[in-house]
Each structure stands twice: as C-alpha cells, then as structure tokens.
Length: 454
Image 1 (cartoon, helix red, strand yellow):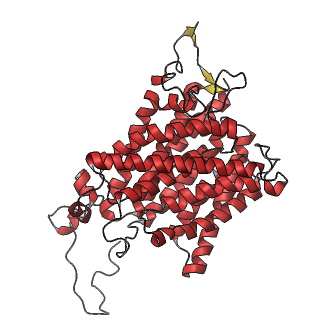
Image 2: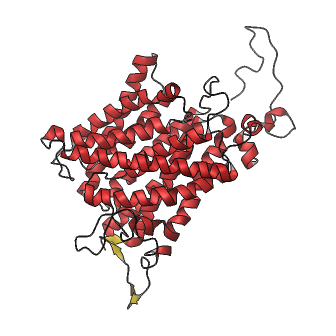
C-alpha cells in the first residue's frame, strides 16, 4: 500500500461525492421556485439509494470477475463487499486487501461516487413533473440493469496474470474512456432522453417561459462541479502520479475553452453572453474532457473543449426542433458533450500523452477513431433502448408524473409538503421578521428616513 496514493484517492472520493450536491444546486437553480426542493431531492435520493445498492451487489456487478463475454461482473463475487474489507489480522497490523497500491475499499468508495452522480444526472431531463417515489424505483432498476453492466464494460480491466477478467470495451475493443465519457455521460444523456420522451412534456412547454429561478445557485453549482471534477478526472489515475497531474491540467484548460466557446456562440447568436451560458459551458467542457484527459495534450484539450462548448451551445436548441422536453438540457450537454469528447479522442489522441495512443491528426489513422465510435454507439443504443423499457414498465406499474393540479401547484408542496422559500414573514403575523408597511410617496419625494438606516 502506498500512503500517498491512498491519501489522494480518499480526497478524490470526497471531491467526487461533493459533485452530487453541486449538481443539486446547479439543477435546483435552473428550475422554477416551486420545484427547487424536488429537483435537489432527486440528486440526494440517488446518493442514498445507489450508495446502498453499490455495497449490496453493484460493485460486484461492475468490477467482479467477468461471467461471460465481457458483459457483466459476477454479482455474487463481492456481494456485501465480502473479501474486500479487513477480515484477518497479522500480529498488530490489519491485513488490508489491496487494489493496486491502494486499499480495495478506497477504490470501492471512489467508484461508488461515479455510480451516484451518473444516476443523478438523468433527473434534470424530467424536472417539474416526475413523482419522487417512481424516480427512486426507476433509479434503482436503471442502476442495476444499465449502469452496473456498462461500468463493467468500460472500467473493468483484466489483470496481467489473468486472475481477473473484465469488460469488453476496456479489454477487447480498447476504446479510451479514462474517467467516464461513455459510462457516465453518454449513458446518462441518452437515458435522460428516453425518460423525457416516455414521461412527456411539461404542461405549457414550450409556449410558456420556464426560466431559471436562481442563477446564483446555478453558478455556485457549476463552481462546485468544476472543483469536484478534479477528483473525477485526476482521481481516475488511481494514484498521486504524473497521469493525475496531466489529467488535472487538461481538466482546467478544456473547461476554460468550452466556457469561452459557449459564450462566443451566445454573443454571435443572441447578442449577449449570459451567466447561464457560462455555467453550462463549464459543464460541457468538463463532460468533453472526461474521457480524453489522459490521451490528449493540453493543446488538444483546448481544441476538444472549444469544439464541444460550441456544439453543446447549439445542441440545446434541438429539443425545440424535435419536440422532446429535456427540461435542463441533459441531452444537449451530457449526451452531445460525451459523444464529442469520446469521438474526438480518435482525432486528437497524442502518442506523447500517458495513454500513448496516436489519433488521426498524429499519424495513427482511423484505428483509434473507429474504436471510439463503436464504444460510444454501443453504450448509446443499449442505454437508450433499455431505459425506455424500464420507464414504460414503471409508468405502467405505478405511474411516473404528478397530476396536472400538482404540477400547477408545485411539485415541492405536493411531493414533499415543503417549499424552497418561506415568505410568510412578509405577510404579517408579528415578530422580528415582520415587514414594515409600505411608504406611499409621490414621484421624486425623498422619504424622511433616507440616509438614517443601514
């Protein structure tokens, strides 16, 4: 066990876990005020549910020894994390099972945070209209049937001695996905599209304006996502090493380029760069560089970020053209951004990077490009089809969306008996929070109290 690697992985796990509350703020600020708590609860609910399922069988399905053709890990191999925690002691020192140079449980915890946020990402597409109970049921089934197997395809690498056999995308196809462009973003993005289509449009969309109620929360959430994403990308090096530093720098520069590209598109198209555009550009850049951060140079990272930022800024308008109500642009940012970042590796992969693979622009021909395309399409098709089936089954069994009356009243009150903002003190009732009666004055008249209050 390497203490430095272990310390970095423990920190990275905490960073990635923070991303889900950051996502809750990002999504929560983008919805209307009557839906903010439900939106945040969908992210927090994913933390609770997937955290438990990961221990029971999820980790074993994703990283257990393969049970056939690289499609699934053995769910019984490490069920309940058996064999991965301290079971025996040698003298005064516990015997820690290792995963490389870190305790196996550090890797378990790190990957649990990936499973959690992948599920939470989907929720943005169905904001304002999905009941909380059906969301949790859908999330549990989706994680079991879609995320855990796909994580095995992408992240489970075979051991050199043959003692562990992993997934087909990682070991047979050899597509590059350093930190989750396919397993996380393409997977969640196409699932969001399928779920949004099955549940239907918000009432009044697109005729009524449904603007973000709190852009301050959106900006804060984007900042927390960028901060946590250093654990997401650099942590995927599984050690405090040069690959982690390489991924960290690419995470900075690609995200910066994507934000600038998004703002430029807004400036040309709409005449004004917006704070929502800046926050969305940040997330688009983070999504794009996630699969590529170990395989492209920093200049390649800037190119991928810039291209993806512009593509995603244009892609968020596709929902109006095709008529699907993706409330918070999960499809436009995560699906399009994940596809762009994954496929562009085939063009920009630099043989001087830690991945040591040459893309088309570095003399490698189309060899890596076709691998990236096949891996992306495989996850897209599997996740899209299976998600639609799961959503239809849950819809038939218990229903998915709230009633029209509940949607008009606000999903916070009808699903959680709460509101995000309490303005009761402004309606009278006495006490320190009671607002003073308004002062009536003619235009231009200066109140007598002007300058006397802090």
